[in-house]
Length: 385
Image 1 (cartoon, one colour):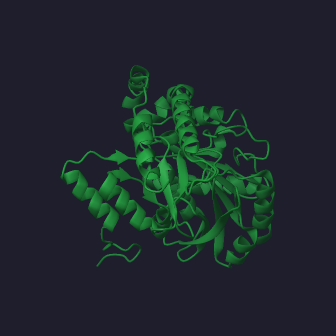
Image 2 (cartoon, rainbow, N blue to C red; image 1 turned 90 degrees about the vertical axis):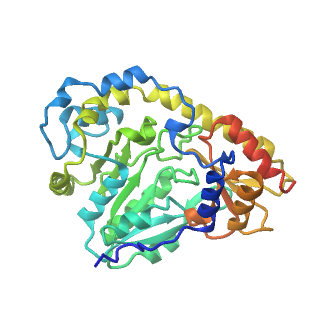
Image 3 (cartoon, rainbow, N blue to C red; image 1 turned 135 degrees about the horizontal axis):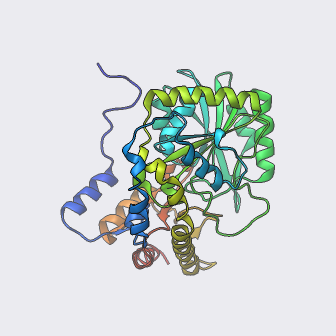
């Protein structure tokens, strides 16, 4: 009697079973997967956040499918005038934004191209819209790049869009100017849309002129830029995301009209967070500064622990909240994670969670509090020296 969109009977994997057993036994774990900023020991301006959410205008419900004008203007201001508020549609989250864009662009059975490795939620987000996610590879040769030959081979008559994550999660690689030019040309040739997930775009480690910070300026092909407060302001609990619609003016207008119809069907964005949007975005420097300091320091510590002759290797990254550690291939990723959790009480994520094409990679969150991160990394590296 239920739909076949998802594998509803999926069973817990060995890692989640062991983790549950450890927690039930009350063991103290060094969790190097923590990606929730509200549990990472950051100092939030609590009074200002709560005051922003207490706006008396929140007591009145005046729904707008695209979002309250004041909130959209605040998002437009975040982009420093590169987009107009009329190009912005608010959602409750980036995940919901994906759902809206997939509804807009694809019929059931159509295809969207998503990067590999990358965020494992794509499979579910696409499947819930009855859309097929086909992967295109990112390759590593001292830095990450798109394999355009493979990408072109993945395009079919049913492909509707190419998704980029900029910077990628978990590789921390930004799209480069030359790559963007080639993507735009491919989308123009095959009449495809570009979807750019930019939730980590403010978390670059250093400046690089080759890097594409955002796709909001793309005008040649339909472009949908997704972001939100969850990562930009470290506030996943307030639930506000958005879509910035770009591309040729005529197509952009049609896309906005259709997105507003989709949004009007749900009207999911809460009024309080919309009125608070401007104030909350105004706090981003204070919160982002703490996050950037944390991830940079943790990454520097990790790099310092691994010498040139080490059997371990840290893959290059340009930004984001994660570090990818290449482990000695004496164990599979699952064996590494189970052993570290079972014997050392250290929790990391295996590369296969993010669809790395080969063994053996471990993924650690750089958002982890420094004491926990250093102790956990020390236990990991002590396994093989």
